[in-house]
Image (tube, rainbow, N blue to C red; front, side):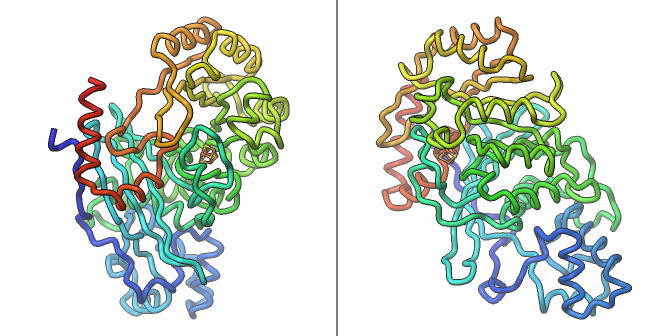
Length: 409
Ligand code: SF4
């Protein structure tokens, strides 16, 4: 049991030196923005397009985080780039690896302007033949979903496109998902066999309250000449910011997930308070209008199972009615309690009855197995626990987790 929680230090130094903190990063810029940034530091106009494609390849196909590894870029050009820009990764404050293989990274990003450095968490969930990276979009959250621990933390700030994308680049570094350094320039990254095959915007924050940065980051992540993630393997999860759902479909085109959790407005007003602004009818209209829906391209509805709150068969019947006409899949999430919450997880047999009812109505309704419980990587548990853990004695905390886990078994 002593390997219950393994804390590793980064194998590759990822810290961005203080001197580089104020330097603009080339990561997270669109091609156009990158071209403009290069022109501003004196790259000749006739060279800009070629330099942008070279950099794009090195940053997003090869995953380099040091200009000196760009072997087909001249030394002079590398020196110019180094003087003006950074491509360093954020600092890995901590890496935790669960007994089930789930990994959680606590990342620190430098201060922006007058602000302070911020920390966020990113979670990787390995599965048979694939792996999903759960990315954060904000530090904290403005919404106050009553079952979510992240919702108890005030919003500190939105993450930039660079910071959103950096979570993916760092995970691929750590998992060995980029080609070796000796691979010749121009090599195309294989689409198959990658450890990070799927991305979900489901970490801390409401991604649609940070629309522009999320859009830029996801369009770069799905760019066919770079990171090349398929749009069908990228899912954006929202609590239901209706106007931006339309924009997500039109402007980003990734898969959509809705944090639903209740099928009546009075209950959803309580669990997901943004429902008061965008009630269920408006939300479902936006879902029905989402472009490209079909049985092969369904919307995922997340439904956390709360004992005696939203888990009756009446709720299941209402859910089936609500989803009528929407190609949908329902993820049932056993609630992960956190200190101070008034909710409890539904009984297992009730979750199964609920799932069976929805399934019989023709909807896939997998019960999500909790992953990374021992490292607090489950839905709605991100960040705040890490902060708490640094304040309490970690050894005592680990002992408590091991004891709890033993009791579950
Ligand atoms: S569920 Fe998502 S939107 Fe709601 S409070 Fe938590 S992080 Fe924010």
